[in-house]
Image (cartoon, rainbow, N blue to C red):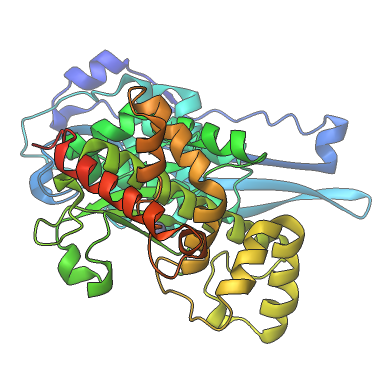
Amino acid sequence: MEYNYTWDEFTDADLTELPGEFTMSSLNLSLDVLNQKQMASMWVCVYEYQFWTPDEGQIGAGDDLEGWVLGPPECYIVNYEVVGSNYSPTYTSSYTTNGEMAHYTATSTIATSPTNDPLLDEEYLHALNVVKSELGTRLHPREQNYLDRQLVVTMQNYWFLKKNMFTEEAKDFSAEAVSTEMAFGEVDFEEQVILDKSFIDNDCLYGVYTAMGKATKFKEYLQNFEPNGSIADLRFTTDDNFATNRETKYHNAMAITDAPISSNEIKRTFNTDINTSGDITNKPDVFKAVAMIHEILHAEMYRKMLDAVRAAEISGNNLNWTNWTSEQFYNDFLNSLENKYFGIFDYFTRYNYGILVGSNPNDYQHQQMAQHYRDVVKQALTDYDPTLTATQKEAISWIGLDTADIVAWQILTPSERTAINNLQSQILNTFSNGCN
Ligand SMILES: [Zn+2]
């Protein structure tokens, strides 16, 4: 499609006097090339600029953007496949309306040009269309429209999806990423970590996270400790209503990591409810640092269990084994866990048999952390605050693990346990808290 007017003429023109002149010219798809005869698929898309105003409800409430935006594309995948010795084209429409068609308002006198110059960029248009098509109904129409004017978000998601071969998990994460960025959160595509706005806005909590080097650094700690360690699909959020939303037995916890039951997202919720004893904003920053790494360890264990699920080829990438058959749980899953992550298998079978899924935090994980992972906590603390003494680090590395049912804690002598608890109290009462 070639237009007989320039972009400047288009933007300067009054809405009622657009020069509607264009020329159609055919595309040369070059399908005579031998290897393309075997199998070829191409995107053919038609885009149209539409004038959108917020008062007509096409754009999200509170969003006062107004102007020319790309309308929903009409795209087709053109597939050429070998049929016998011949090949013939099949046309498949993958276009779905986004449900929010723009209205053309002849009475409006406002005509602003798109603020997003890259909208005209061919690579961007391609990426935009691929992201929208691949994510499909995972995106709300409002999120689809949001992408129209967010070059960076679109390209980040495009490259992320491409790098991850457009797997279902990658699409799930990408859709969460778009939703989060639209809600002013942060997404770390490299580590697959989502930070909710509430977490970022909590300056003292986010400050500790940043000072600890963000997810990349956490990942390093785990990799040093255990090869192949990595963190995936993590969400950081906060909860001001922890007392209402969580069982009483968790109210003294600074944070909680939910098992990935309904999806493969592992959510870490920090307790910011001032009406609970666990309120993390009421604790020294070194306690917050311990909570961060503690929850990362939970997440890492869950991630490995998810990986075992995937390796066992059990459908549904989550840990909701109440939906599985005995065969899937006892043979497929446990065998896979045993082969891939023997440590987790060992603790899981020793401490979690018969315990209903969904109970958080899971004790088998605390048993394993207390026995094997306190060095990771101490290493993170060393980097976070080099002035901490070895005794102090030893004491606070027990936070969240110093309970009667934890075997590694039980085998300490009573005087060792008292000394650790006393030092924890002293640090709790005297160390600085950035939230104050
Ligand atoms: Zn825990």
